[in-house]
Length: 344
Image 1 (cartoon, rainbow, N blue to C red):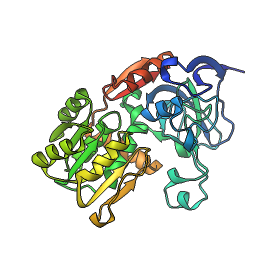
Image 2 (spheres, rainbow, N blue to C red; image 1 turned 90 degrees about the horizontal axis):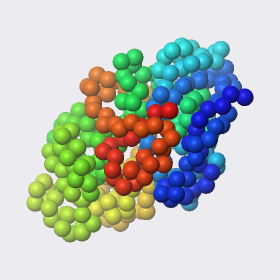
Image 3 (cartoon, one colour; image 1 turned 90 degrees about the vertical axis):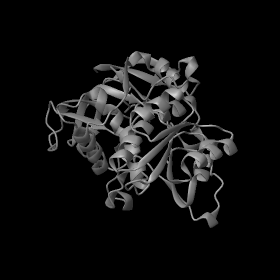
């Protein structure tokens, strides 16, 4: 059996202990006639993988089994196709989102919301992850990439890009709508640009000055340092901008979600794109709180088209596959400007 290099997680542990081990596992091969085999050229490093690896989300069943190969923003070249594949040919480049597969029969799949399918398979939560050299996927769950789009640029679009796009859509964006984005990392810096395309006025919030500088450079009308002292934070926001029309939360901290809800005007909208406790919510203020999750294959095609046409900026730093532990530690310490990308 042919082998491939992979960073494998055998048990959850703090990233400082280097829980990912570089080992050789069986190379994936096409099992079904509608599958493609992708030689991975780049895999984005997502903050949610850090939570999975460190065991923060075991109570919600993530990761569902071990050992596992993490990584769910995968892009590469198609090197083999099953006999019934019509969407791709050998030599095309394609990417995969965290949604590796869905049943295509349930209510959600039939509504075009296959990412909500209850029997879906998630990329990076089995041996089918991106921190390796090859991956297989059925043609329906892969998205073609333009020839002139680099793999390093494209990889983060398959989670950070689609998550940011979908979260902005959920705010019902329109010109001059005042949208606060809480957390300007890999996802936040993409959401900011999608909101700008919709004509929104974006105010960015982050604990990191580096991320605030990125937000200003990408066109936020203001970038404010997040403070856990809620009264102080609210006073500064009110004096500078008044209340927000809508807010999007990407920072996985309950205090941030709570503050975001309080920052939005009565009748406004809060989009939560992270995992956390249920925040305090006053029904009489008529605010709407929405959850959001990646998106459909159609959404993914839209993201690729918009980024290609509008030349959106994807801020990336490249690292070799075997440095995955060190990269995740940098991410934990807020030392990655936006998105790290592993190159096998």
